[in-house]
Length: 416
Ligand SMILES: N=CN[C@@H](CCC(=O)O)C(=O)O
Ligand SMILES: [Zn+2]
Image (tube, rainbow, N blue to C red):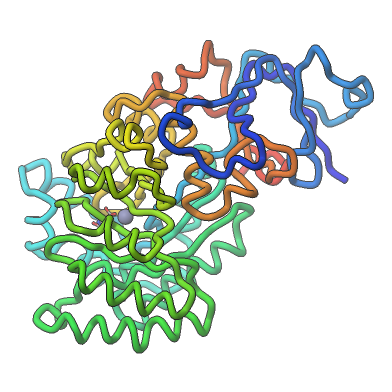
């Protein structure tokens, strides 16, 4: 049975008890770190760990041993919101943005989600798979060890299925947990501009049954936003998806206080994501609630829209997760290290809160926190070892520079 022993760890990060499945409010500032530690991995799982001063002598006899003086060991980032299956980047919109156009103006000028959808319609499943593989391999090298991936650039039965089949292939090809989300309700295709109900009927009567038949999705998502899907339309889609056992993870309050948070909670959403726009009502709804508030600070950074009110949410005792939102339009980056830095710098999250939000709470936002997201015996050994670092806060502090030296997936060093 393959075993790996990591010794002389400066700090073993996120040593939560196995029963701890998510963190809310003030609990998020508690990031247990074991200093001067060892960690034993076996059969792809965390077998044991402890202090170097108490390491059992029979463990030290192991041949596969790495001594990592001055380095920290982290549980992998758990990125619970991405759109990494797409046909082409949209850097022409980046230039429009530099010249002063807003996200809404770019969409109105033929850019945005519909731009990605027309390009995706022309791409083959193999092409989409190959480009998504490159993105995912890159994200893994940057410390991501679990990921959620959405459809939503298809917007027709055929293309949504094509995207979800690509995600299914990614699940088989990569050694990390992957969750798939149906986001057919991402935008109204041009031909349904004046007949929203016809597109909703297509989602409900054709897409949902076909996706369920092939078991292609774990979750349902709706972009609940002014100019996209209204609260009532979201309600109708989530109710229909519930009949197929698809729980919601939805786009809410990205551009306005849209009512998306409350409609998500009404449908027991696993998470409501974005929340760049919040008010007291949103904070109160998420207080004590099981639904996780997933914040995407790289999106705010790139679009120049407000940063989410993480402090208000944490003070309201909400569960907060962090994710990348990697997509070609609003967030062309899947770098979770940068997400954690932005959370500290712009959302004023303590580094302990940000790391918990990007690991254990990210895993909870994919319903996999029983198997990943913290250092606990029996959990999946998806980890990263840093370069030598003076302290834990150095990782988010040194934004834009990678502090990751070694990635371990399922107890083995990942070389991509
Ligand atoms: N806002 C909706 N969806 C994506 C952006 C999609 C796009 O612009 O392509 C997001 O989460 O930011
Ligand atoms: Zn998104």
